[in-house]
Length: 376
Ligand SMILES: *[C@@H]1O[C@H](CO)[C@@H](O)[C@H](O)[C@H]1NC(C)=O
Ligand SMILES: *[C@@H]1O[C@H](CO)[C@@H](O)[C@H](O)[C@H]1NC(C)=O
Ligand SMILES: *[C@@H]1O[C@H](CO)[C@@H](O)[C@H](O)[C@H]1NC(C)=O
Image 1 (cartoon, rainbow, N blue to C red):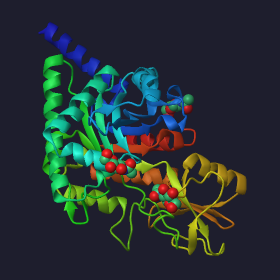
Image 2: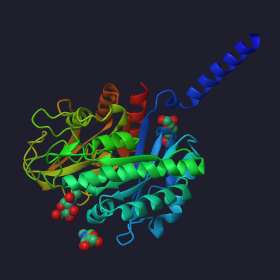
Image 3: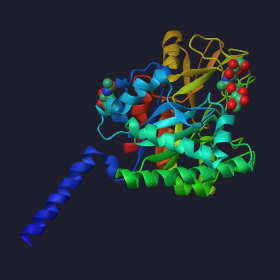
Image 4: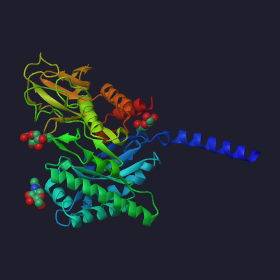
């Protein structure tokens, strides 16, 4: 009896000790962000203590063989990614992200349409993950938006086969199954076409919902707006609407990870005295630091505010922040917005959040706010 008590206490205190080391053991949580080499942020600079998962982006798809490839110039960085971020956080899990915004969607559509090319993709993806020490694989296609019922059905079949291959590899290698995730549109339906929800439920660990880029100077030239509003009283294009559609379509909240843009968009105001959300604009701002398409990192937005003394407002209706100086207007997610979105995610019972991307944050401010809000 005494011995059993001793054992009990040993395991009891050991469990508490483990929970303190890694709170996510108690309740699985995803606090994630993407990193990519062109951002020029050294991997060793990533404060990985703020995350549970990091995505290394992007591996590509060979147009001929339909195999996953890592560009030669990225190979050393990708091979070192996991061990480097584990130095500050030994519990961190890394995923190799395949695709990206500039990838060619027709190659992907062709790949998922044939059993043989699906197998080429799947086998090579698993090989790259194991060879480079990643814990999982993430499908991140600009194609995220399939255009036909057939393409959606092929995506469902592809996920079935990807999971089956991962299960089988785990059995033969004796290692834990690789995680499988995908980046998806902000809503479960687009142009009345639905994602293969049942296949996603069965086969993916979670989806990264890209709940941003709702408004940008490229597709809203004539007025400013919240690029990633949590709420939108006059349309169904918002973070909350998208998440509700995903849950309503049958995906468990525990499989949903919501995206936080660590960047905003900059417009040129028509009249500097009209500077609210929805003020008249004439396309993107030409302010320094603004990229083609009008996007600008949170870090550069803070620089702009520091330099110009721009007014900085929080709009509780849309849940967005914006700043303006002269004829420049920027809509973005600052710390208050991030805190509100992470609270929303917790209240909805979501699995977690991800940031795009680590390099756009300002001295870890948004990453820290997100992590602290989730813990509170
Ligand atoms: C990393 O984040 C942790 C947790 O917020 C913080 O204590 C630490 O100072 C950060 N390190 C750096 C280098 O910013
Ligand atoms: C995408 O790939 C297809 C098939 O390989 C090719 O025909 C097409 O030109 C490519 N498109 C772009 C924009 O590169
Ligand atoms: C926005 O428009 C510019 C100019 O037409 C184009 O070069 C850029 O690729 C577009 N960006 C996005 C994100 O669509």
